[in-house]
Image (cartoon, rainbow, N blue to C red):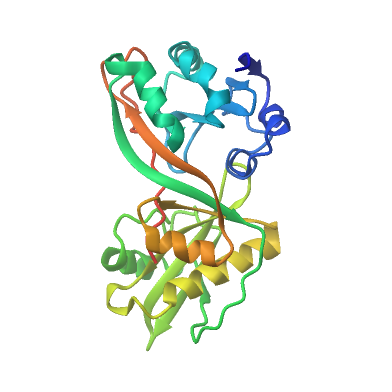
Length: 278
């Protein structure tokens, strides 16, 4: 196992391990991610999830390299909280969870907020479909989109009408919205598919596939990459995305640090990335 070293930039972490999550979600120019540390190809850094005020600490990398970071985690958390008092949680590569919880023990009570996977692709999609999504407007169509999500997926994070979405697509059947999806930009400036949802009465007909494919192609034509997140247990959605060329970079587990932990705050819970099922 190697030695822990403090790093001055996300670019330094990328020089050690060109990780797609670091590149496209955090961004090489991020300062929010600091302080950050590395050990071999493993790293610990801060992340402010989209639409949340609270920071979390991410810990990722091969178990053999991450071992010293896990051993030093109480000290690293204390240093991070000193710089950012709003730090509220931990997001861990799933294969590091057992060792991390063993190291922190009962002194650091945590609540699992969710297990999710982050995927990306650089490949355009070609599918056969009778569905042709059309562009929607974040402001003009906001009321209709809000009503659609009420029946299709009330927990969707696409936030119509709030300026968060860079691009919208929707499909109609006799004028009624039946499938919708959006693209946000990450702090790194990369496109992230979100809010993909299909009316419950219209599922099973390939609408989610058509929306995802069209959003993916839009993102790649303009940015050269498309990213998305999905609950790890949603095997149907993961299979759909992998069939479109997406590859999993991380299986994450996100935890909230509960009151009673030495570094816990009363900030918002650690955010969980949830791609709503198509």
